Image 1 (cartoon, rainbow, N blue to C red):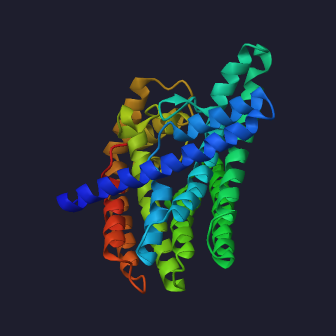
Image 2 (spheres, rainbow, N blue to C red; image 1 turned 90 degrees about the horizontal axis):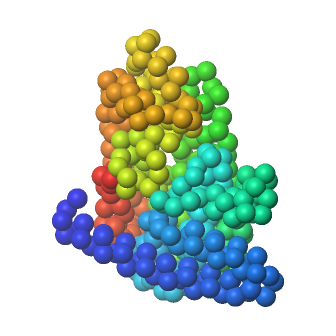
Length: 360
């Protein structure tokens, strides 16, 4: 990254993420007060949702929505900041459901939403606490999706722009669910391919980032070419992000926010695993296959999996793949007509570089 651009990028992320967090805080406080009138349990439920959403996260989706809007409109107003909350709430909705499906205990260094309720219910009826936690997690994800829809449907823009944006929102959710289905099914395939993985990523990760930017461009009244090229940019950038995320999930540090090797324990067919299985010796392939999906994977076994992934060249392949995706994304950005303003274009170029250089 260019140092001057890097400083601008970090400052802009900090500024806009703070505005998003402030808007989230204000929104949830109002929801919590409404819930107080129903019952103390509803009050605690919405308080837990607020804590889950605000406990961390990079806010890249709402920030990117806002910057797409600025790239076309030239300004950032409170209306688009408020509207941007929709994609952050949808993102967190998917995280709550994803944590249930993956049986994850921690998210951003703290207990997952369903785990919080499981432990809370243990004091009431221990033999049913597992089911109760999952049930409340399903409801939590559903609530956040609905809140996002509510925010966007009430956005202070021309009704035609809001309707088009709502279509993007609904498409994002449908594609995200389709991607989660693929994510669940890939481990069941005799041999998942790179193409299978990239399709899953384009849906599970790419769809929401793509539609976040499309919503920002749409609310700004962007041209059809602007919206389509920004969408293509976002899809490619998101794929690079996910490839890097899978690498960090095994080769990253504690700052990643979840246990190293959790994807292995879940048996996930990430790109590094797929390429390692393709390129490994017969003995190493058998070893890696035995480690995939092993819930009680030891540190030594994680290290053995890492050795196989490195020795097959799978790690280098994934890193090169992420670089290619980033370069393709930058090219799409340049094809937007009329072009974005220079500040937004610089931001999105830096964002793609951040996606593959980050350590968290």
